[in-house]
Length: 305
Length: 305
Figure 1 (cartoon, each protein chain N blue to C red):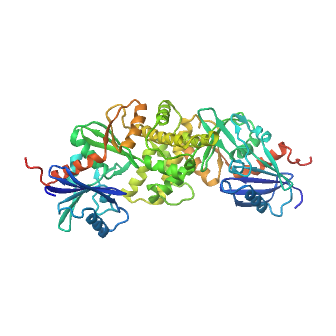
Figure 2: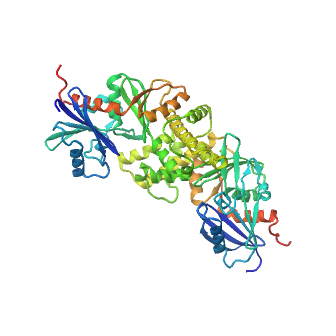
Figure 3: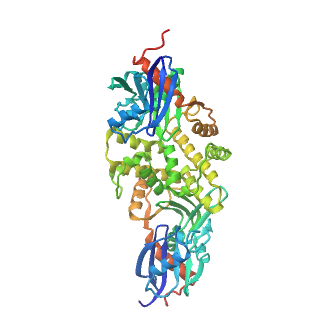
């Protein structure tokens, strides 16, 4: 493979994706593996890296995500928010492993003495998004296990907030009495849309609706697929209500960044609130962002003009 | 044992308590055992009853709680709300087992086509409370795994609502990333009081505060006992906010019915909202209520005057 100049790694809590890039940032090869964050010691991270990049050339590597946490391969201290995303390229942490330069992207933290928050991995997707919309003002919503809401003003990150919606969904649907009531589903259906619309125009609490799902199941024997759609609707609308309480505006630019499946749920819920978000696939933003960071930090040289 | 006239059973999801009562409703003996609801078949419920009441005289028995659910010993159909609590004594379900009359107290249901809710067991505590405050108007809050809020007008139950706060607490503290941050505790301390006061005067979302607990733990290494107090504060305040959104008034009579440990948490949180609730121990209301129901339904005869 000629012209390979960079290995990029999207190294999260559960999985790691690795890509071999050429001097234009094109993907020549891509692989997946287990993360090991929280379980591996340094030697095991090295072995995992060797396994993932077997037979790839000895070029620099750059990694984003939980791999840079205290339980990761090498800690990269959080960059404090508010900040410009360009600061990421000045705050990379590099070390040498096996005659190769390995570079880790830091996460972001918010700590104003009252509010505390952290992210790792999403900052790289943000960098990828801002590469094409550098002066963006608005709200980026990144749905997931831990949804991140990011406020941007003229391309600068002014604040962010995490909602544990995906993790609540799992905890509630697997570890509470609602586990008897919900089944699997893949995307939002008309019941989801109906429920988010009802909630958008209603005034009651979402907490009160949750046990109602179970009670209706007892009283009416209604179908488990329906209840799962409604549980998704309740938890996602709770997140959207919380985001608004926390000062995020839904009547200006709103952008969803995430998997196609999840962003469709959020798009439907946002539409019920009169908001029409743009959508971006989060993983598609990572390789261009890491390539760009590697260029800016002069880990690699760009394409010869 | 002379003068024993009734066996009363408080038969919940996890445990069962049994009491032998005399003709004045005094407790002569009390025992505890496993519930079996959801696991036992009819024969096993009979065996469990025999085991619990071994050597007690062959007097009628009356039971409240999940024992009357579809997965219990004998189903007692829910009584629809709004209703007077006196209706309970007209809606008991009786059957004969081993030459003995066994009577089950029904639960309550709310089903107005929009909202669905159920309770089993708490209706008996309500009956016990109303026996001494028959014309009560206000809100009864019964904290627990599934907290019940009950609206009463002139002693009549007009509505109720379940919040899954206790179950959320367990799900969140055992099955999410916050499990790394929280430790055990027994009662509310000054950190709990501080947090509920901050939340009472704040405008942000509670959802947004949850991940903040984890983030602060990462950024500041603060102590796990503190985080558990704050998690309790967040979830209880979320319940209190939800109750108000759902139309319950906290600026009139508010009564807490539950265990001493839990009611102290709720009392502290309610005080932060300017509300001073009365407190009653829930289990202490059950034997008098069952004795009273047995009298009203003429399962037993009262004390000779």
